[in-house]
Amino acid sequence: MFATLSDRLADTFKNLRGKGRLSEADIDATAREIRIALLEADVALPVVKEFVGAVKERARGEEVSQALNPAQQIVKIVNEELVNILGGETRRLRYAKTGPTVIMLAGLQGAGKTTLAAKLALWLKEQGKTPILVAADLQRPNAVNQLQVNGGRVGVPVFAPEPGNGVGDPVSVARASIEEAKRKLHDVVIIDTAGRLGVDTELMKQAADIRDAVQPDEVLFVVDAMIGQDAVTTAQAFLDGVGYDAVVLTKLDGDARGGAALSIASITGKPVMFASNGEKMTDFDLFHPDRMASRILD
Ligand code: GDP
Image 1 (tube, rainbow, N blue to C red):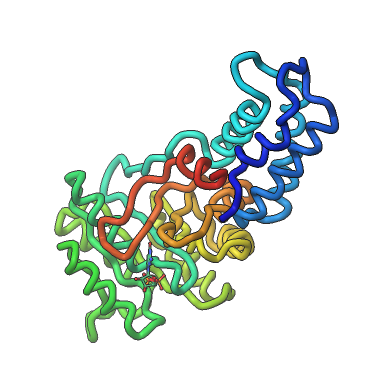
Image 2: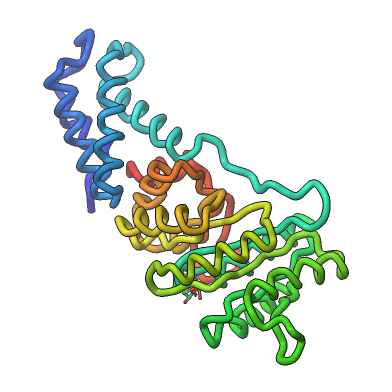
């Protein structure tokens, strides 16, 4: 088990109570502990450096408060800065003003997109929406079937290409799905797109073409929280290649400490909107920056 940042700092500040201000040496000792805590949580190194710099700046200016001991005070600053980078408030889904709301999912194969699509559909259904799922991942032979199975589990229809119906490519499937949604009065369209094992330009181009064709209200980048440091490279590649409005973190039920959330939010400036934390269809919720901050620190 790792010691929590609070434990480490309590140790660092054992003899500090009652001093008026933190000395440079205290601040350096603090910075070292925060750095270790963030690296243990798998936060990317450039993000750790920037973060520690910001906390040092703030710590320098602070009077040691009467109410909190120095360790508590630093943990409070770290926590506030973390929540800030993670987007502050929970980011809510933006719905279209007219016509169906179109949500497009992008991410690497295995990130959990297909599972997430169905979870999101269920979550929307529980809020009184009438979503439809769209199988625009025509790359992986089993992807359409998998979406249909997941759709069946949550009782949400799936729009998929059928032999001979003239919509064999992902862009025309996506386009046709919007017409289908309008015809059948679905108010949210969730488009699952193809993922590859690694970032590649063909995948990016296909996702960008779908995006251009359907002009989604939200493009969500789905990423596995367990990939740790690699999350930053992938997140940046999808931001450059496809662009997205917010991030969905999956597999948060694993033992990842949540560094990926901080790294992605810090490097891309995009908020994390949803968290997927299990294989059950109900293992899904809005992302709460304050809860993630605690997870990174604990
Ligand atoms: P896709 O290739 O991005 O569509 O990924 P899938 O939805 O097929 O998910 C890949 C694997 O991860 C499957 O075995 C899912 O059951 C699993 N999975 C997806 N989301 C989660 C999650 O939040 N927690 C866990 N433990 N497994 C997940």
